[in-house]
Image 1: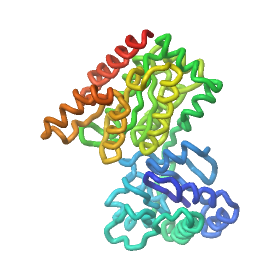
Image 2: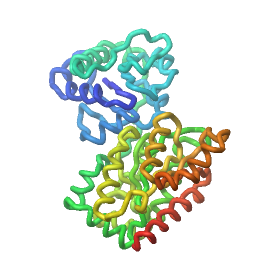
Image 3: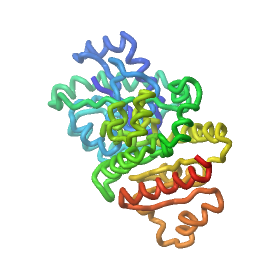
Length: 377
C-alpha cells in the first residue's frame, strides 16, 4: 500500500510516516490485503523528507522530480496522492481515474478539475489529518489492487543525502578548516550552489543540468545541489561517493579523503536559506564579504516562480548567477541591463544567461578564478 505526499511542504508527509511506523497502521494495511503500508515521498516534499529521515519499511524513499510524476502515477502502484503546495500536474485527475488511486489536495493553493474534496493542512490537526489520509489509502487498496496491474521491479537508485551546514561541519570534524584549506590550496577551485527546476523547454529532462554539473566537477568545482535539479543529480548517480570518478583529480582526492560525493545533496529549492548559512559561515572565517567569495549560483533548467525568487535572492546576496533558458524579460532592455550589468555595482551580483553547457561553465569558472585572485589564493 503506497501513499505519496507530493509538492513542497513536507509536514503532512512527516505526520503520515510517524503513523505508518506504528504497528497498528501496518496491521490495518495487512487486514486490507497489503503486505504493509509505505509512504514514498515525491518531488520537493520528498527532497525535504529524505534530507531529514533515514529510509525504513514505513518511509520508502523518494520518487524523483516533477516531470517524473506521470510515470510514477502510471505505474499502477499508488493508493493515495496527497498534493501540497504546487507542482502537482493538472492532468492528475485523469491518472487517478485510469489507475484507481485517491487524489487529495491538502493545500488551499492546489485545485484539480473535477476533484471537489480536499483536506487543507492545519498544523494543529496534522496527526488527525494524516490518519484520515492513511484511512483513504486503506479503503482504496482493494479497489486499486483488483483493477490495476502494477508495474513491478522498478529500478532503484541510491544516493547520499542529508547535507547541511551543520552536517558538513560534523563531517569535517566540527570546523570548516578542511574545506577552506582545500579551497585555499586550489584542490577545490570554488563552490557552486545548483538550485534548479527541470524543464523540457530547451533539452530533454535534466539533460542540461547533468551536463553542467559534470562539467563543473570535472573542473574541480564542488557542487551543492537543491531542487528538482537535485533529483536529476541523484538519478544520474552524482550524489554517491563513486561519482568522484567524474571529478577532476584534486576534487576527486578531496572526496576520497572526506568520504563525500562531488555533488552534495542539500534538499529542496524552497530551503535555499541553508546555502546562505554556509556562505555566511565561510565569509566569517575568511573575513571576506560574500560577493568576494569564489562561489556562484546556477539554475540550468529553471522553470517557475520559486526559481525567480531564488535567482533574485542570489543576486541580492551578491552572487554570480547562471540561468537557462533565456528569461522572458528580453522586451525590457532596462531590466536586462540591470540584471546582466548594473546589478554588479548595486549588490555585487550579476546574471549570466547561456544555453551552451561549456560556455556556461567557462563563465562560472572565470568568475571563480577572478575571486580567487582577489582573495590572493
